Length: 359
Image 1: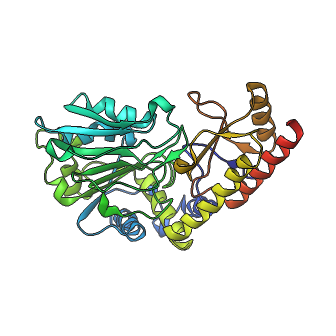
Image 2: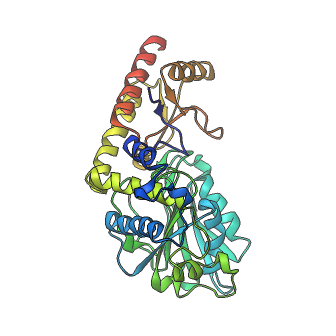
Image 3: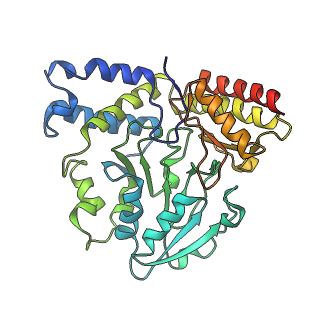
């Protein structure tokens, strides 16, 4: 029996994807080799690589005016590459802080130039997406940076700002969970290990005219232009992770695309949020209602003793990964795209049962 996997990342991968990868693992398309064994310069791998690019463009509606790159180093390397490439000496990088990952992104940017915190909800323990104004950012702004979903705190941007300067978003934990207007952004980046597949590959979607503004005095491997000019094949890419990404994208397409996935995600999260709201305060959500995440549902119980008991009983029933992050405590259910509806229903029912036994 497969676990009810609510891990925050690396996270659940669709079972049909795992089964197809298992079937093809030893002999990929009659090559007599695994995908992991193919040369990244071979025609067989090139088809996998380009298929992933094409599917992502199709599913997100990415225009031809954007490049799609497959890089390594996770979102954490992007925290560095972005200011290294796009923060010139006479400009300021504006950051909106909505959680720990946006703090980390800001920390790296400070090493390369002037930064400004445009808004922050840190004083509210990141329970909400902060209010902000973009007035005046065009005077000296290099870009505005946001983190679209906050895994630790369970908050998510419901609407994205229209920025007068380039808008950059870390979408590592909610890319493909709902429809977005890619053209609002100059650059989107996402580590794969939440909604896109296994860890190892990082997707970057970057506007071509923004790419042309990048600094040239950047180490070769850390320049976006290097990877753009070489179709993300400048050095050996994470070939197996990109193969798995292509299978996940095929699965999303088979589900009806991002619109259908969004509807299902809203239903899945609804089960768990309803269990919280109908518990008469036994469960308390960390995020304010207008900022609640579809992907990471965070909540606390009345005390630490009950929390430990809840987590142990949940584990006994095959629910995995429900412990909250240490900075928030309590519990967290990460209901990424690959987490089936049945798992969310089962968790909501368990929450109601546990509450009735211990209220």
